[in-house]
Length: 220
Image (cartoon, rainbow, N blue to C red; front, side, top):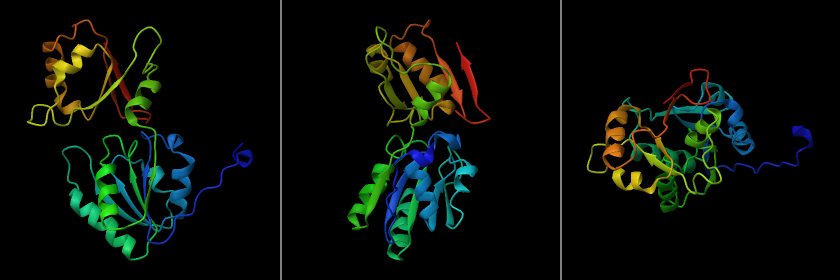
């Protein structure tokens, strides 16, 4: 089937950086563009959420581990962008690989701006965002005619801090909410939504390690 697909991947040039999404975890969710990029790069800067099976595709690349798993040691964001700039200026073919989609809670926008400021050529390779893939894998439609006309993607990382979201305002929309990075703050987020008026009878699902063999789904 792939042989019949008229797909001609672009060439990753020396001195260029491609910011790529690896999808939610299952290697089968990797896009053809990302797969082709991994086969071309000679420097791979990857996050903790990227499957080892996906990292292994970049067999000819020097690997740089950036971390980025919640509450565990990680490179500072400014150090990651400095590394990307340095590798590009060394003439390397660089792939910056992130879980999900680089532009959905992946800080891809920050890295793109940093590369642009340094006049480093870059490209964005979109990936399947983890939140929506998790819903599909659990058999939960993100939207359904006659039920909802929107879906809210929110981060739970800052819950309880000065940067927290207005969960009451989100609750008042009456629309489904997909919370990324919310496990550590789940009780606080749930309480805030209920205080904002979300009915206690609202269906909810907690999905961990979506699309992977370690996936766990709890529905209430």
